[in-house]
Figure 1: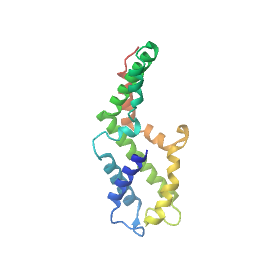
Figure 2: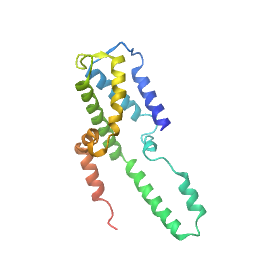
Figure 3: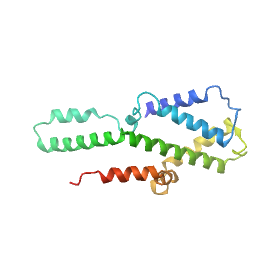
Figure 4: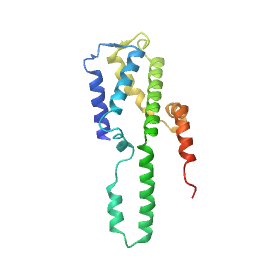
Length: 178
């Protein structure tokens, strides 16, 4: 998690370099800046380096597999678990998932910007407000990203993206039946 935060901060610093707290941001300027930060973040290092934020490597699995070769039950479990993790990593590192993740993140960003425009206090985001007034509002909205999934507006936004539905339809259609 610390590397996720530092990489996101680096992307934001790069995009916002030269901006000042007194600079006015309209909803379109804020949306463009947020999209640039996301694009910069998604393009850092290798194409799928962000996969490690979703599914960090687990070296304990390798140690368990080599240290318990005498116990067939544990080895069988480890083998099945290892196979599941390998298959999951393959799906998450696929170009299709990367595309769907990017589309989903952009849709969520659009929803956040829309919510900020509706809930802007002390001025209109449509006509612009100083970055100093926007930053606390952004911080206040972040916990809503983690609301209970059944009540989470942003999960609903992702579920309504046609590319997400198509990706998972194709993924589940290609699952082996065992």
